[in-house]
Amino acid sequence: MGLFSTIGKNAAARGQAFGEALAFLGETTVCLLSLPFHPRRFRLGDCALAFQRASFDGLMISTGIGFLLGLILAFQSAAALKMFGVEVYVADMLTIGLFRELGPLVTAIILAGRSGSAFAAEIGTMKVNEELNALTTMGLPPIRFLVLPRVVAAILAMPILTICAELAGLIGGSLVLQMMNVPTVVFWHHVTSTASLFMIVFGLLKSCLFGLLVGLIGCGAGMRTQTTADGVGVSATSAVVGGIVAIAVADGILAVLCYLWNL
Amino acid sequence: MEPVIELKHVDAGYPGVVILKDVSFEVRRGEVFILLGGSGCGKSTIMKHMIGLNPILAGELRVAGLEWTRKTHDELCRKIGVMYQSGALFGSMTCLENVMLPLEEFSKLNGKERRARAMSLLADVELADAADKMPSEISGGMKKRVAIARAMALDPEVVFLDEPSAGLDPITSSALDDLILKLKGEKGMTFVVVTHELPSIFKIADSCAMFDKARRGMIALGTPQELRDSSKDDFVRKFFNRGEVHG
Image (cartoon, rainbow over all chains, first blue to last red):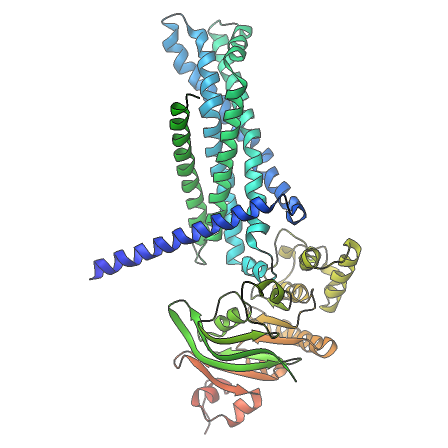
C-alpha cells in the first residue's frame, strides 16, 4: 500500500508539474504573440539588460570555447587526413561542422550554463522574496514582466554568440593548418567555397530556436522555485540540465528532419 | 460605515487542504482591521484569498463590492495595495522607480507627473531622501515604508500589510505603527494588517479577527480591548495576556 501510495503521489505531482509547464508555455506564447499588437507593454529596458548579460558578457567564453573547438577538431582530423595528403579538407569539414551543427550546439550549451541558470536564479530569488506575488497583486503578469524580456534576450543573443564562436573556431582551425604548411589563403578559399548562405542561415535559425528553449526552460524553472533553503539552487540546476537535454533533443529532431527533407 | 471587504462563510486553504472553515467578517472603510492568531493559524492564508493570490475554497468574498474572478482581477488589483513581509521591493530598481512602477503601468500621468507623485508618496512615508537609493542600501524598516508608499501609489481602497513588525526593533516597529495611524487619519485609508504583535495591535487596531489553528476557524471578533477584557474563550484571554490566563 505504501509503495502504491508513493507511486500515486509521485504521478500526481508529475502530472501537476506537467500541467503547470503547459500553462507556463501557453501564457508565454500568448504574451509573445501579442507583442506586435502591444509593443509599449514590452519591458525594453529589462530586455536590453538581459541581452547585454547574455550576449556581450558571455562573448569571451563562447568565442574562446569556439576557438578551442576549431583548434582541437582541426588537430584531430588533420592528423588522420595528412596520411592521405588531403589535410586541406579540414577547412571544408570545419566549415560544415561549425556552421551546421557545433556552433549553435556548443553556444547553446554555454548559454544554458550561463544565462539559463542566471534566469532561474534571478526569478527564483524574486519568488522567494515574494516579488512575484507583489507583481501579481499589482496586476502585472510576471510572464510579461520577467519572462518575456529574458526569452527575447536569449533568442537575440544566440545568433551573435554563435557567429562569433563559429568565426573563432575557423580562426583556430586556420592556425593549425598554417602549422601544417597549408597557406591561410587556401584555407579561407575552401571555407568560402564550402559555406553556403542556406547553411549559415539554417545554423543561425537553429541557434534562435535553442535560445528560445534556454530562455523558456530557465525562466520556467525560476517560476517553479520552491520557497525552501535549496529552492533557488535546485531551480538553477534544473534550468541547466533541462536546457541541455532540450537542446540535444531539438538538435536530434532537426537532424532527422534535415535528412528526411534532404536539406 | 460601508464595508470594503466582506467574507461570508469562507473556507480558506489550498486545494485539498482546508485551514480555516466558515469564516465571516467585514472590514469597514477607514478602519484598521487586524488578522491575528498564533503561528500557522491561517491568517496569512486568509489574506492571500483577500488579495486574490489564491481562490477561496467555499463561501463568498467581496473586495470593494467585487468577487475575485478572471474578469475582475485587473480592476481589483488597482483597488488594493499590498505590503509583503519582506517589503518585496524590486532589487534592480531604485526606491523611486519601485514606487513609480504601478504609475507607469496603470496611470495616465506623464513622466514628470509620475515622478512628482512618487516623490510625494515617499515624502508621506518620510523617505524622500532615499528616493535614489537601491533597496539593498536601506534598512528593513525603510524597505517596508517604501513598500507602503508603492502600495498606495494608485490610491487603493484598502492596503494590506503582512506582518509589518516582523524583523524590526521595537522603536522602528512603533514608528511604522505611527505611520499607519497617520495615513489612516490624513488620507482615510483602510488597512488590513496581519500581525501577532500585541503592542502594535492595541496601538493601531479598530477591529480584530482572531483565528485558532486547533479549531480551524475564527474564534473571536471585536476590538482588542473587548477581546482582552470580555472574551470567555481561554485561548483568546491567554493570547492577550501573553500566555497567562487570569480568572
